Image (cartoon, rainbow, N blue to C red; front, side, top):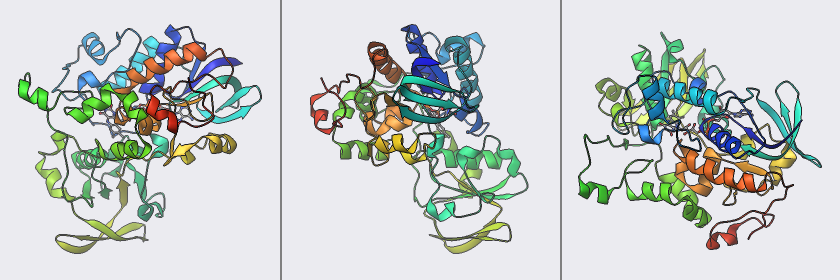
Length: 421
Ligand SMILES: Cc1cc2nc3c(=O)[nH]c(=O)nc-3n(C[C@H](O)[C@H](O)[C@H](O)COP(=O)(O)OP(=O)(O)OC[C@H]3O[C@@H](n4cnc5c(N)ncnc54)[C@H](O)[C@@H]3O)c2cc1C
């Protein structure tokens, strides 16, 4: 079976790109379980951090927005100031898929290798297809990060926060959450809501919560000082959403620093005011030693209030995600080795193309190239528009394809295999 473009992954990025490619008549196949990260890897009861207007998948006409979905299903919606529930976003994403990408194939991709005929893509049931171009829209779960100190524990004693959609299974057990970001705080809150005996430790002494949206229109002075963007208010965020190609042209070190620091782990504003949560989190606390003993985890903790040892049934690492191509085990090792990286992330052209012509990365994998926006659903529109135009121009042509790098300063950093114009 032949196809011009294969998209691996059916989250917000894969689905948005598929909707755009179909509209442009590009022969596309898309694989994966729809919205699986949101359905199976986020805790039930969670709310999104992004505002309603910034929580859209993208179709070419901008018709199937969260606002439209909520209107059609008679659910409350506001552009800002009304947290979007996980359940609402899941339903919206699945409705978008049925409406805009009905031909989705739910099989997982288990292997991709480069052959003389093109890229050979193997599916979970062993079927193989050949394609000229592959877009890896594989999202965040492959990159779940557990610090070395905890990673050595037996699998039944430690897990990453992304492993749990249903935290009620911990009822009657004692759980320690590690981390200072939204995943960690959300997990703690939802554990406590399920009457689980849970605590949280984090090395950070203070948490920077996402600012709550104001009520009504913002004063003009505020709007000048911190203009609104899809990543929240502030000039930095605004630059990230309005100028991803300028970001792409910046030196490598600068880009990595911005992605690391800007919008780093920050819990939601509504977890800040919860007094129960407040009492169960221990900031400025480091884990000195971890050991497994009699089916329990023993943690030696050191913090401002001294040292103590606690024994828990399970540790949940709410320690985020780190892009590392080595984790994409469905990529043939030879192919993976030819993809040039910058600190674990693929080096990408201004059209999302890696150093292997015909292999593209979007979403979190592209954040080091296009900035923090592509870590969030808000970046799906920019990505789908730009990449679909490029693929529509080049899809029928054999690789290597003519690529563009967008802005002059970045020419210096472009991998030599990529053609520039
Ligand atoms: C706790 C938490 C809260 C978050 N809150 C927000 C928020 O409020 N707003 C926001 O914009 N973002 C939020 N994010 C980030 C969010 O994950 C991304 O915005 C979004 O999921 C990116 O979409 P994606 O399509 O790139 O990736 P994903 O949603 O991760 O989708 C990738 C898809 O690829 C599939 N896949 C992977 N490998 C294969 C394979 N080999 N074969 C087939 N399919 C495969 C996966 O199953 C998945 O369905 C949050 C993340 C976390 C962890």
